[in-house]
Image (tube, rainbow, N blue to C red):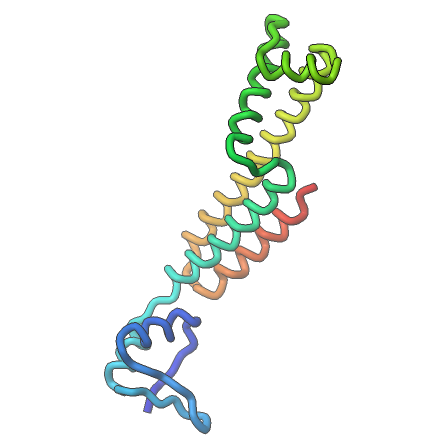
Length: 167
């Protein structure tokens, strides 16, 4: 008879990958090889799997939140960096970079107007990016310190709620 202790869905994957099976019938656990399956159950540590899965959920939520503030297109992240650098440089020496000059030519805006907008956006991007990065780091640190595999999902849920609350 199998002495089963819940250790997450990963346990079933490990049992199956070992070439064995485990099913519950009439309230009893039946295994293809009781001794081998019991040994897998007894030695299986779900914590690394729980950490990996929970951290992936946090990173996915963080990536989705970032997309609410930036456009996802090839090279767009570099464009944001160039614009931020040009706006910051304009504040130093009133020099107009290529992105700023193109914008001014097409929209008729002044360099001050463009630099002001880009400086504000840059500050917002940095603040959101820094906060999301800090939340990811917090999740990683808290999960690394956790000894109960079931708490990893709780940690992820709490961090994801904080990510989703960002406006």
